[in-house]
Length: 307
Image (cartoon, rainbow, N blue to C red; front, side):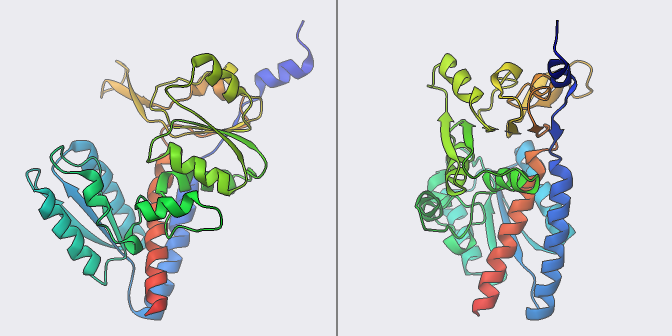
């Protein structure tokens, strides 16, 4: 026979962390600060987005970023280069933006066409304008105690912001990061360390049994493995906070598109056990754009106040 506490746990649902609503709040905060900058310096922050080629998904992301800039009063500099552009041409364009005083942030939309070296292009972005936070010097400082990068990568920064604005303390907590990519897994584990969490990283070479038992001990789980519904309900410690960075398309014949988006976490199962959980879509995604705008604003404030 079930005890009343077991029944209560069964009926209890995790609090949904609404990334869309939190991002909207951040947008309005940024909009207010942009107005103040404009009044004080007669200038607004500027963000340049460089896109090479015409990949549909990249175009969608770029349009979303440009629309978000317009909403908060940040000026967009649109650089659309043809697919066949050479690496030298892309780098020349980056140098031009580095020299433009009205541009405070430069974002190169990835992936780049295969004939262009990603690392070669990204390392040419001025560290003062590296709003993506991927410059080796920014990542290096993120990894060092007592040092602060000029910018933190947007998606990891958004994950920490979701925790903080949901009243979830990181200090002294056990955090497990699933995945070790340069874009999310690695930098988010460094940010968690900086926030005084005890951090473990689980990745593709961790044995399945170990992955499960390690994740089960976590107070905070950040899933960024790119594997649909990989993390099951019985992998989660009751009451844990679960941030799902995964965006995976799975077949769904009931949808017009023929697919739907799911995270790395089995939402239906996990939401019955976790204390907090982010949905997919509508969780981490909107925060990535909000943090990009925040980084651009911070870059502009630094530049304007030092002139």
